[in-house]
Image (cartoon, rainbow, N blue to C red; front, side):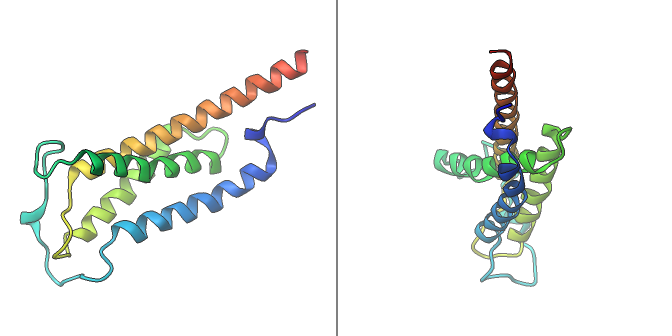
Length: 146
């Protein structure tokens, strides 16, 4: 019986590694490693998503694309009964931690818009993983009935 590429052991075994690597990429890219200071900068927080300046389309796109692979690999690395909300929860925690770290930086601007875009990106990635899984299962069923 043919197996779909989404269910092959090789792909599933690589998913936790990919998830860990991508999480490290996110942390490396978003945490201000070089200019931590001993006090917070609450006045720099952009509290209102898509309203607090500066609102740049490129920032929105980059944030969504940065977290999309995380949502995808989280669902691929999880148990078969994993849900999209698991990926959303993990992305929320990671994003909030990254934005919190930016409170202690002179050069970074923490933003709720970033959190919203990051979580949306993880949600899209998780939905794509589920879609791929369902498409693979349909392909296997069709191959078995042919």
